[in-house]
Image 1 (tube, rainbow, N blue to C red):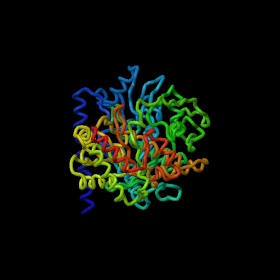
Image 2: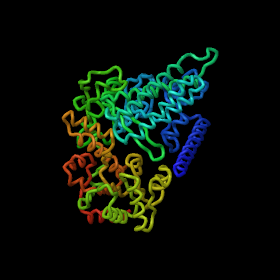
Image 3: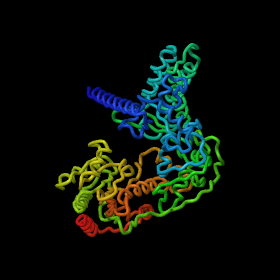
Image 4: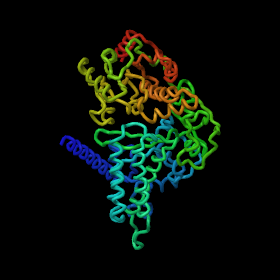
Length: 538
């Protein structure tokens, strides 16, 4: 009964998300605006799947809703435009599929280019769930015979059972039962796609049949890719408390894809405030495919990147640091809590919580707290509320992020604590933010299968897997997080990093070179004094 209740709660939450998305789309249609998912109400991937279809499922000009389709309208406008502004994901889809999603272009400028490889990795990744296979069977029941429908349902059951018998983590040849189940899904989906793809009634277009055939083909292609266990891919089992287990496949690297399908296609300019890691452009150049000699073995099997370039080629490139209008050494202090204990797995420690209270009190609020987990943010927010009277401490998850950011900027002395979406997604110049607190160095999860695979590949190639993958990931996020402090030439304040490894560990200098050149100290009393003076002068 308890499990049934959780399922009902999950379905209720999903339904609410779908209704919110539908209302938003209708509002966009009334305003004759082009809706972009980035501007949609907060929603899960499952909710989006209920109101959208993939490009392969789209019937195109044969769809009865073609003339009012947002995507078709956007494509038509793009074909007539001299300048197209889009996002990383659409650029990635265009590069992967060579499908003409974007018009031909002579040059591309990629802003926030530090996010490019993660966005392309996401676009080149696929998921497979038993419910996805079952959905194809249900949608295709009008056109499939009983044998084909039953084969899909049996394959979904086989996949569900194999997932339950397999632990979370990376899938390899040793997981024979799961690989066999994925092969069963592949064969059933191939059979269904073939039957659904046959011509239907000649007297009318059947857009639903076309869409279901495309969905079956997508399941087949994903299962085929997963069953192959190619060296260029990483396959793993994930688990969600409400949604159960599923399979994901992602490319080991996207450097070859980017080099072949984007960088060698047209003049490309990549811009960002955080393209230098460890004081050099070299790490980022390797990630995006400009330095083939630092690849992780990706090029020979780069997924759907045609035509391929020479995998050993080096594209000519130039890195230019154009400087900053900010005088970081005069405008900001970087405080590192060198005398705290190293962060552990049990959450944020009492000593760190004590320093948070001291720092926030000295700053008079005006604090952006960036935490490595939701649990740490909630613990710190609860402790600060108990110890600090006065302006509120907001915590991510208590309201929608845009509302929290609005209150943080509008209500004097307010503090905002949160997790990863705040590290890069908030811009509050002025006196709103005098103090940025970072609870720990943001290394990726050590049990993340993709991170593990990339580190192992770097080590096999003779590199240092930890430095090339985990440390560079942490350096990028630290630079982004610390960059929340100084947003204008008049801003002043402190970035406080409560992780002593920044000054104690052997990789500390690499991380510090990735940060803005603040005046640095490990003296808490001096830092508290600076914040009090800043608070008093304000």
